[in-house]
Image (tube, rainbow, N blue to C red; front, side, top):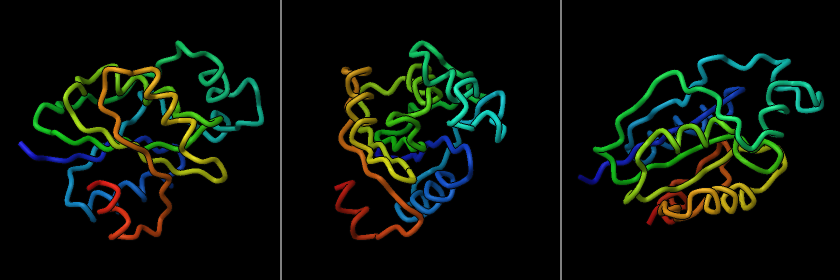
Length: 154
């Protein structure tokens, strides 16, 4: 077993485009982490403290429900992608991690962001899931560099 999968959550489509390009570039399978209840534009209004994304972020116990489950037993490498919300991954990433057996897998994190770096989110996930083999994280944009990606995953 030496299979790789790119799993991602995308609220606006940016992370989805990066994930698709990344999966194609590294010849990996692709899985979208979709919420049961899609996010509307109002839900994503980070300037509104009452918006759904703000409320979820403010509640560390929040675990938005994932629409579809996936069996990751055939994969040894899992890339998990997400937009950065308030420096950390959206809480649906916690749901995904907690609902899947990721022990003994190599885990790489990637994120998209308009202005944040990925370091805080990587530190957060390593602290939340110390038994997982989270190797590293990388902030990615739509212009992926093949050599840079290969070096990151080497």
